[in-house]
Amino acid sequence: MANTTAQAAEAGAGSHPGPGVFDPAAADDRAARGSRPRRSGRTREPRERDTIPRALRPGPGGQIVRGVLLAVAAVVTVFPFYAMLVLSLKPGAAVSLPGSLLPWHLSGSSYSAVLDAQDVPRWLLNTLIYSLVSVVGVLVLAALAGYAFAKKRFRGREAMFWSFLSMVMVPYHVTMIPTFIMMAKLGGVDTYWGLIIPTLANAQAVFLMRQFIKDLPDEMFEAARLDGCSELRIFVSIVLPLLKPILATLGTFVFLWHWNDFLWPLIMGQSSGMRTLTVGIASLQQQQVPLSQVLAGSVIAFVPIFAAYLAGQRYFTEGVTGSAVKG
Image (cartoon, rainbow, N blue to C red):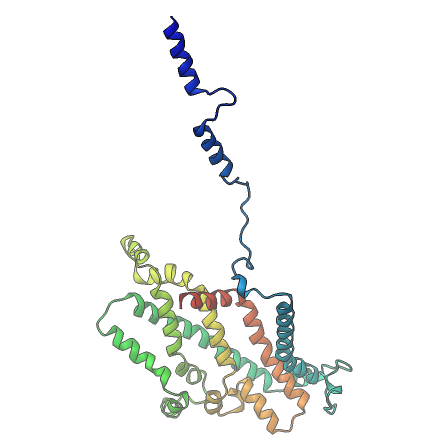
């Protein structure tokens, strides 16, 4: 009986030490529990400032200098547009700086005179047709060619692609005269199709489309083919929706290029009725038209470009950011 009691006491003492007795295992367990980090219900997302290395973070003085520089750059950028707008609203007034740049005594008669002119609405229509049709044509052809060069396998693909891309190295003015002679023999002078068709083969657009489509996973296209989709269905249902950012970015550049194009419309539009806005506004300067009306025409030509940028700003930013990350 005594032995049994002693053994039980020894077992109880080994498993649960009494007060004042140091237990190394329990101490280690308490230390481990105390060193564990406490988890909170919300996880703080890193701010943009936290992602910048500490050595590169600007101090208070650097932030002030950066703000001043950005403000100066903004003023320098916006000032020509402000001057163009204000001077276009002051018809018949002599230009004297800086008094003419103050927004007083404004009038919209110059815009009325420009819009009431016989040829200006026609020039605006010609520019819209030239820009919009060219944008649609360039984007469709570039997307089709980029998909073929990126995902189709055929003999001579690389040689054909790099030969086509070599057109970027040829100056535009070198090919202008042969292209004009060709279009003149085909009867394309003073016509819309003669103005538009030579500008549809855009090597830079094909290159951008090919690089963008090339990064798309091949498994997605293989799965679509296994489901019985044709190549046209794959292009329309899969490729085009994924190309929205690059299409918006490229479309903005192409629209801007065609809207401001001067030399090609100048040599293709022989009559006054086939001129574009850029060519027409340049012709107004030769006719001794008041400066306010010339600037009013420039403002009218600028508004559609600005509206097109605002419409595709989100896709434009995504396309430029995505291209930079992939590059």
